[in-house]
Length: 324
Image (tube, rainbow, N blue to C red):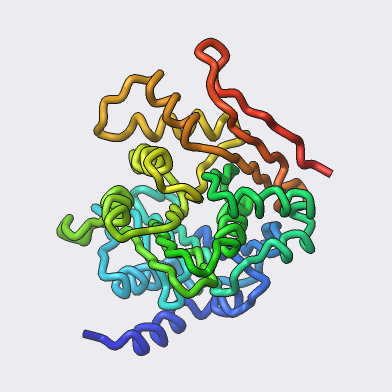
């Protein structure tokens, strides 16, 4: 087996055209649209860079080297690669024939610097009034769902909220790719794993969630619910596991609840819709809506409290606009 240090040095060589951006703390994502078009995200805005790979073959070699490090295959039969770099940065690559114009590679950088609510206030992402509200919600062990689009700051806010959990509590963090770093002494990190080249070894979020319930968690944090694990989370929230934190894609608090509904219906449990909605209304306490503004700034735009459900009108949400 090749030592990780050797792999790391080899990867730096293959990724040499973009390595300066991977080393730049102001860059949070590198997007490679073929060998001659490389963008970075800095300060919430996309920038086209002068960086280039010498050829499509060089870019393809970099992708295959990343796949080798992750112990996976990427080829015409398996054209999508999900992996991580040695520093934890998340990699998504798509190659032909799924990408007919050529290979694409996106690298979402991983940072161990924990995001705090104070830093988010300083960045203008939320107000002190919002911080007080959210701090009370975490202290009261209310279940919080952070909703927003891709790149809207959901994970950063979730990380900041997790930092408010008391240090004497056991936290279990479940993610499909590790991004959350909780600055607490008693944290268990679990990470899903896709199947290997032979279709074996898969570990799903649902499997990890079910294992978590036997690990005596005081708090459960799910980086993002994307499928049937949403029902496991809702049932945990209603069965004594208060103070859960998670994120979901949604453009408003109402959309987030409907999204959770849809994800729960993807589970293998045949639950009537009215009963499912009752469970969601009982489980979720607070919804936080995030958005990326035209300026590139990420902001909390709405705080909402789910106060129940009406058989005719649906979810009863008390929403206060957080825009300033």
